Image 1 (cartoon, helix red, strand yellow):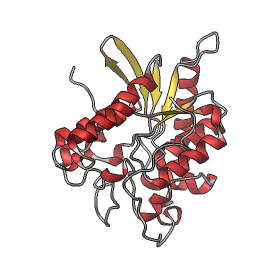
Image 2: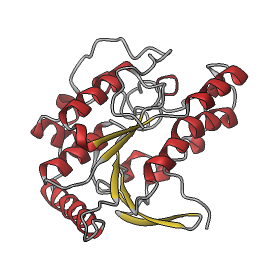
Image 3: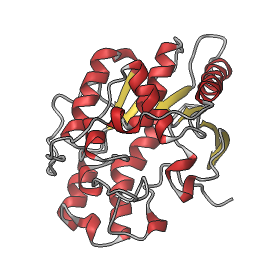
Image 4: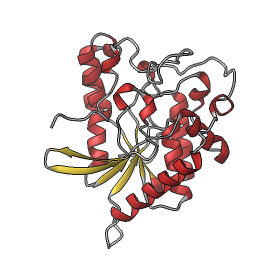
Length: 268
């Protein structure tokens, strides 16, 4: 684990370079008629998460997974605005866009005590690239998922070790695979049972951007370049009008395969 990405290796894949036509806040900030109710529900769920998973000795056993996308910066802002003692972790995969790394640096500077950064095991990355090449993810789903396992899943396991609960920015609107995501669910990995909170499940894209615009939340400028979902640089592209929110992720693969594993339900 590291607390700074200042010395992180520069990504081999450049970020988007096209100049923004219009700010995402101007384009998307269109709240639902019942946005105030949704926000109140979200705030209460986060308060309950903090209460339930803080031990009597003050030990906090709930953490927020922050991808630095629009949804997650909203969740982080609400947590901090409410004064909740819930830290966040970021998976710095070694292949993020420069824009994402810059936002991570700003987040660390703003709340250094509340942001934990996890990186993949360097030797595992080196061996994978030496065996398969830097663009292995384009050759097969198996190789892409192997890359995700090294860069995301193994660091995720470390980030969640010892935690009894975690918080995500999942929304039902994001994709068909997430259409039935509940606000609270229980996950089991081996003998470990963990609660997962999804406080934005009912929020629309317009709700997310209304909150960002209203509270002047710092966000990834790639959103201004039509990147609704932002992951690793080689696996993320801008989308066109009418495309699904996650169509820019692993766009060369079948629609049903578009998850890295972080939020895939394991068979019972």
